Length: 333
Image 1: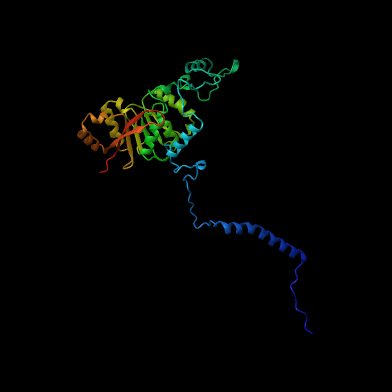
Image 2: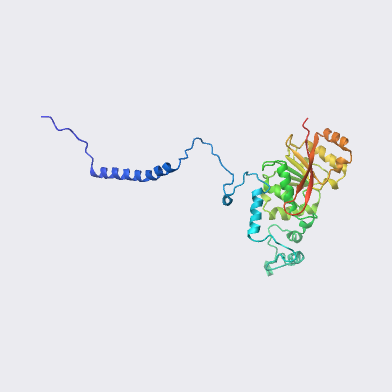
């Protein structure tokens, strides 16, 4: 007599565990299936990511470029909308005056306090010694040097935006300013550029004191290590023999220098300007060139390996003011 066929025997605990696992799997699968039935599934077809930076809405605005420098038209429109929304557009000096703080002091009064007490709130008695880590002269702390330019300090931002965009700068670019003064313009370049990529030759000691002892520390830019050197003889050898600049500029400097010294500087700088893309910008006028006559100036520039590109007029963002800039580049021949 043949034995009965052998069957597969499953214990009750195993059966219960299998049913539970199946239920859990179906529970997590249902939402996925339902979402794919109503919305197409975005499945990656490549390992390369595409990041869209275009604005999608007013409340979720993103700049179109990580290297954006000047405000866009959307930025300006947003600003105007906020001014209007808060009814701030009718400011008149005769009716509105900016109120002072809870402890109002003029610059002169602030300076007196700083000289007498080494601060507004100060230590007393045995603790009265100066606890300042980076000691700064009182004249700089009340920002008297911001009035040394004959126009608002804010104009430095205008110059930076024009030069940086005209030269198509990126953070990795290298910039040389001839006569950076107290860094009214230079601060913006230092902040934007990579560390050690901003160089400057400045003759005035008081301007350098303001730059090093107030502006760089107060703006949190010590880590950018700009190379700022004192000198008035257009000697650029201390900046390095092999450094090449994307932008070299002189803001209201060449017009105060003897023509011969300007030409010496241009001769020394022509080889330090990046070919093709590098630019030299000079503000206000180029009398060192125009006094020679257009033909003679062109010939002299050509002997230095330079050529004149054109004249630009740039308007200020904040106040009724414009500046004229003259552009030069390495000869294309």
